[in-house]
Every structure is written in structure tokens, then in C-alpha cells.
Length: 116
Image (cartoon, rainbow, N blue to C red; front, side, top):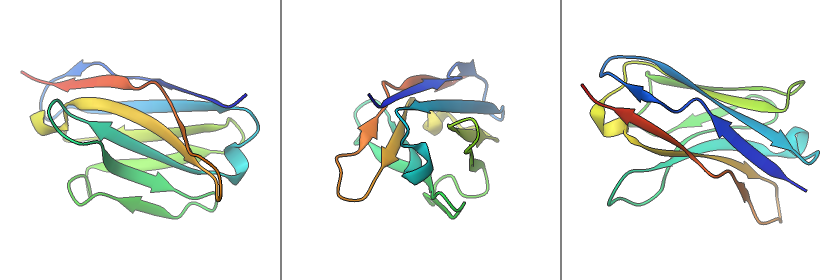
């Protein structure tokens, strides 16, 4: 059974940093494109960043230069390093695993709140 479990979401002040983790089970990590998405109150869920099994990354324009996605295949874990956080980064952050021709998998989400 595939499961994605996020951790690391907390209350942080503007300009601060935070590192999110997503641990994947079910023997799918090595063949999946991993990603982070987020959904703010009253807004649609949006892509934050993705990373392929070979390390190719893609970022939303709103987070380029501030966020970094990475993966550790040995630990079946994907990370999202968030720096220079802004209040508009406040959202529930979801881990995603995508495999070709299969329904994607989602974690339950972790709350990130950026506020003074």
C-alpha cells in the first residue's frame, strides 16, 4: 500500500526558513516523480515544485529562488527547503507521487503558517 506522510509544518515568522519532509512507502519512490503542492484558504491547489527520479526540478514562479526541492532515494524521502518565507506562502502543503499511467498519490498535508 502506497502512503505519503508529510512533516515539518509549523508557524514561522516572515523571512524565516522551514524544511518539509515527505516519506514514501509502498515501493514506488524510485519510479515516481515527486512533488509538493499547496492550497491556501480560498484558493485552488497549486504546484510548488517537482523532481524526477534523475533530479530534474521544476518550480512555480512564485517560489523560484526561495524554495528548493530535493530527494533522497535511499531514504524514500523528498524534501522542500523553504527560505525567505512570506505571509502569502501560508497554506497546507501536500506531498505528491506521480507514476505514468497511474492515479497519483497524495499525502494528508501539513500546515505552514507564515505570520508575525
